[in-house]
Amino acid sequence: MTRSSLRLKDNSKIAIIGGGPAGSFFANFAIRHAKKLGIKIQITIFESRDFSQRGPRGCNMSAAVIASSLHAKLVNDGIELPKNIVRQEIKGYYFQTKEYGIELHRPKPNENSSILAVYRGNGPLYSIHKDNYSFDDYLLNHVIKRGVNVIYEPVQALKLSSNIKTPANIIYGRRNSHKEMKADLVVGAFGINSTIVDKIKGLNFGYEPPKTIRTCQMEMPLSNSFIKESFNDNIYVFALGLKPFRFASMVPKWNYVTISLVGSKDLSKKDLLDFLNHPVVQSKLPHDWKMPDRFCMCIPKITLTHAENPFTDRFVIVGDASISRIYKNGLESAYITSQLAVQAAFERGISKEDFNRYYYKPARKLLAMDNLFGTFIMKLSDFVTKKSWLVTARLSYVDSKRGSWIANHLNAFLWNMVTGDAPYRKIFLQALNPVFQIKLIPVTMKALIIEILNRVKSIAKNRINIS
Ligand SMILES: Cc1cc2nc3c(=O)[nH]c(=O)nc-3n(C[C@H](O)[C@H](O)[C@H](O)COP(=O)(O)OP(=O)(O)OC[C@H]3O[C@@H](n4cnc5c(N)ncnc54)[C@H](O)[C@@H]3O)c2cc1C
Image (cartoon, rainbow, N blue to C red; front, side, top):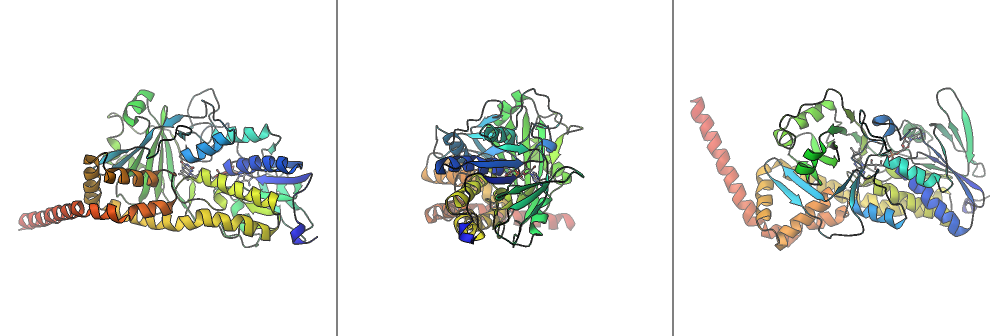
C-alpha cells in the first residue's frame, strides 16, 4: 500500500474525538460526501460531556453568538434551530466606550439569516427550565438521527502506527476501564480545553497546538423585562480602555446576560469583579443590582494563534484545536475547517500529503492569513481605545452625521469589528480608508487641542495646590 492509495472506501470507519460543533459539523459533511460517492461509512463520535447538564459540566463555554453568516450556512444545510435553542434573536450591537455609546446597525440587512444567541450546554448553573437549551446537543442529535453512533466516554489516548496499512487505535473509557476501537480515519475535534491536546502533541508527528489565553465568563440572572427594555435586543460591546481587557461583551439571553471578557493576560474571577464594578458597566445594570451569592462562571481558553501540522496519515484535527479566527466567530471556523477536511478526506485521500495540500494549506490561507490582519487590528484597537478623548470625539462626530457617508463607513467598520461578518483584511482596509481618515483629521485635531489644554490646566491646578 502506498500513501497515494490511502483512501476512504466502502465500510471505512471514522472516529471523531469530540462531539462539539467541529465534531458534529465534520460528521454531517462526511455523511453527505459518502452519499455523494455512493459509499457506506461508519462514524463514531466520542464525547466526554453530557450537554443536557446545566453549567460548565455540560457546556463548551462561550458567549455562544451564532454569526448571521453561519446561521445562513446552517439554514442552507437544513439545520433549522428550534425555538428552545434560540435564546434571543439579536437585532444589533451597542458599542460602549468610557464616555460614549453608539448603536450600530447591520450594514446590509439579510432577511434569510439572523444573529442568534444560544447556550452551548443546557443553560446556566442554578437555572430552572424544562426544555433542553443546548445548541451542541442539538447539533449532535442532528447527526445521530442520520446514523452516527455516539459514545459518551472520554478518549484517553490515540495510537498511530508507522505502518500506513495499520488503522489507528483509540483507547477510551472512564477511570480504569480501558476499551479500544480501530478506525481508518481519526478526526480530532477536541477543542483547546482538553488534556488530550498535550497527549496528541506528544505523539511527535509535528502537531503544535494553538497558543491560548484564559478568558472569563459569567451568566448574570436579570429580569426579562429589564433585559428587554435596556438591551433592546442588542449585544453590548465595551471598549473602556481598561487594563487588562481587550474585549468585553454582554449578550442578552431572555432572563440571563452572558458576560464574556477577553484580556491581554489570563483572566480570573477578580477581573470579572473589577469589570462589573466599573461605573459604565454598573450604569447598564439595575440600580439595586448586587452580585448574587452563587452564579455560573467559567474561565475557558480562547485561541491566539493557529496550530502547526494538525494532521498526519489517517489523522486530521479540525475546529479550535486546528485553525480558527482569533477573537471571533469560532463556531464558523469549526464549520469551515470541518468542511475543508471532509473534502480533502473524501475527494483526495487521508494521507498526510493529502491533508497538508488539500486541507491545511487552504484553511491556513482562508483563516490563518486573515488572523495576521486581525492581530494588527487588535493592537490598533487597543491603542485607540486607551485614548478615550479620541474615541469620544470621533464617535460623537459620526453620531451627529447619521446617514452621511462617514457615519455609514464608521458604522460598517465597527460592525465588522464586533461581529464575524467580514474578514479582518476587509476591516483593515476599512480602518485605513484614506477618505475616512482625511475626513476625520479636523475632528481629531480639535479633540487633541482640547485634550492638551485640559492637561495643561490640570497640571497648573496641581502646582497651585502644592504651593
Ligand atoms: C469566552 C469565549 C467566547 C466565545 N464566544 C463565541 C461566540 O460568541 N461565537 C462563536 O462563534 N465562537 C465563540 N467562541 C469560540 C467557540 O467557543 C469555539 O470556537 C468553538 O467552541 C470551537 O468548537 P470545537 O468543536 O472546535 O471545540 P469545543 O467546542 O471545545 O468542543 C470540543 C468537544 O470535544 C470534547 N472532548 C474534548 N476532549 C475529549 C476527549 N478526550 N474525549 C471525548 N471528548 C472530548 C469536549 O467535551 C467538547 O464537547 C468563544 C470562545 C470563548 C473562550
